[in-house]
Length: 340
Ligand SMILES: NC(=O)c1ccc[n+]([C@@H]2O[C@H](COP(=O)([O-])OP(=O)(O)OC[C@H]3O[C@@H](n4cnc5c(N)ncnc54)[C@H](OP(=O)(O)O)[C@@H]3O)[C@@H](O)[C@H]2O)c1
Image (cartoon, rainbow, N blue to C red; front, side):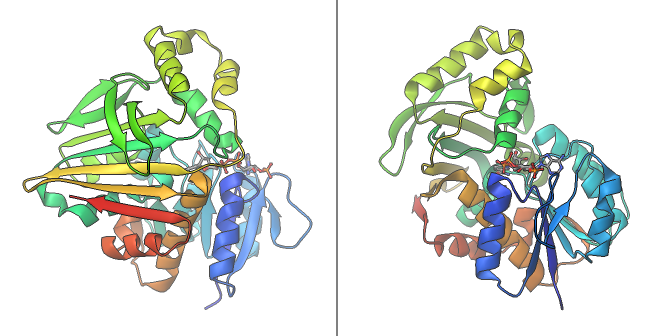
């Protein structure tokens, strides 16, 4: 069967990387790129997610799967995909937007595969959690993120942090939501891969919601640290002194808008169950965009390869956990270490 795949936001940092990895592993696929500017080839489509009248070309080109790699706050693309029975994979949504979109999809008559893949690094964390323990037995999951300001970062990712830094969010203790704010509640954590001991601070990613509400894990927290200890401390001090509330969105974008030339990205998952504690450490030598894009490609390949029913999914629900881990492990710039 012919497979036409459209990456909206495909000219961006992550979208371009998805396109590169997807085409190199699956040369038989036809990959279209959607963006506001269009482009020179017949594979470049002029699509603006804020303007549904620009979506007609999606039907004209007989797209089978849309990968969304740019913020679509009004869920126009999701609505279009559901109405036109097109498979849909979304890596973009911060927690509140994800909950809204998931509810909308769950209440719709869905005749395609709708996959939310917005968790940290393209929605692979819950799948990896399930490689460490049976989800029914897990008492607590802690995720620790090491983020380098030297890594490449697209403009849209920076906007996400600027828009959300002052917004409280929930982590979970004893199955109850606890309201917290970014960059507060320090916890000292010893990172693998030679990084060493760091102060890590509250960080909102959709995995908090997914691990508690979907995987039913009673205790879930996510903390992050920057490669620069000074920046980590400074961002916490800004939150403590409520400076983000005073700054305009433009000023907050200036704080979070920097992009380096590329660096490693690391996260670690600590799972506590009745038998004790297990830890999985994952490093992407080529940074966050490469790993996010690879995850999106693995979800896409899974949708193409196996007969998943028409339904609404979180991306980890597509995979056998150990198969997901071994596919990540097989990628040359990814290292995984597990300790008990
Ligand atoms: N789940 C995760 O782990 C994860 C990780 C990283 C990033 N992300 C998300 O992935 C998305 C892309 O991030 P990025 O770093 O690649 O950002 P980016 O470099 O800014 O790319 C976004 C692209 O979207 C296009 N675009 C902007 N507005 C548009 C519109 N109204 N309609 C259609 N296209 C539009 C732009 O190209 P044109 O100028 O051609 O329109 C731009 O190249 C963001 O939503 C980010 O939050 C998720």
